[in-house]
Amino acid sequence: MAETNNFIDLDEVKTEDGGFVKRTVKDSVFSDLFEKKENVLKLYKKLHPEDVDVTEDDLSDITIQNVLINDVFNDLGFMVRDRLMILAEAQSTWTVNIIIRALIYLARSYQLYFDDVREELYSEKKMELPEPELYVIYVGDGDKPSEISLSNEFFGGRNTSLEVKVKVISESDSDDIVNQYIIFSKVYNEQRAIYGRTKEAIEETIRICKDRNILKDYLESREKEVVTMMMALFDEKEVMETHVLNREVESYVSACKSFGATIEETIEKVVNQFRLKEFTAKKMVERFW
Image (cartoon, rainbow, N blue to C red):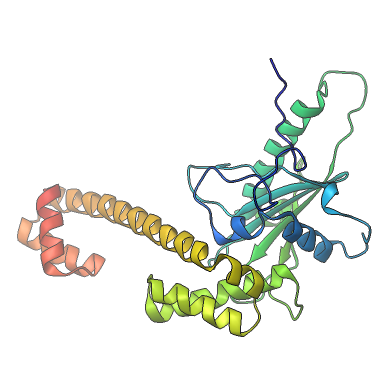
């Protein structure tokens, strides 16, 4: 049986547009943008400007899909020589739980690495280990620390047996590809606040960013695909929010019944609690009564 290679050599897996391996889950702009080797190289050089002689041939893709749950996560993993680079995007709502996400990603990446190089964990010989670098790209507003750590955020700064440090990349004055992506995300958040989850919000985001020379080449070459991807993510969010709302209303109706409320009283409470129209609340309460 042929050996499987979990850490993919990008020269062995060519895509039609010369990019990283194609995703098997629904793409986001983040994963689509950094699917191209040239963009990953730009990202790496932003993080390590001193490494002037690195080329696309030094890159290996290790992006892992569905690390935590079956959902879209904007995570990127790749190796550059003896460095293991892991980046995770934090959405507009900041959470230090991103440290846990990075830790799980790192552990899984090392597991794949050991499988590929056939390292024996129980051998007397010390294994060679790629040096890890963990980053979070924050696309929301407000100042964030330049680095967050597991010990400080979860263990009160105590010296425990495990430490994880994650560097935070926020918006800056630079013109590199990472900062352009952050600005693109912020423009999108602004337009979504104006137009809601609509195609118009996406098209306005693209227009504004092209006018401001933000990811201009990428957006001009992939505009149709970007609209399609972002509309698909809208649909996914709508489905998830509807599912969550149904479960919350079902639990609320059950609680009202247990306290002896009538169906009419429960409908009124659901209208106020979940800010629903009376017709919608009536249909949902009747369904769960």
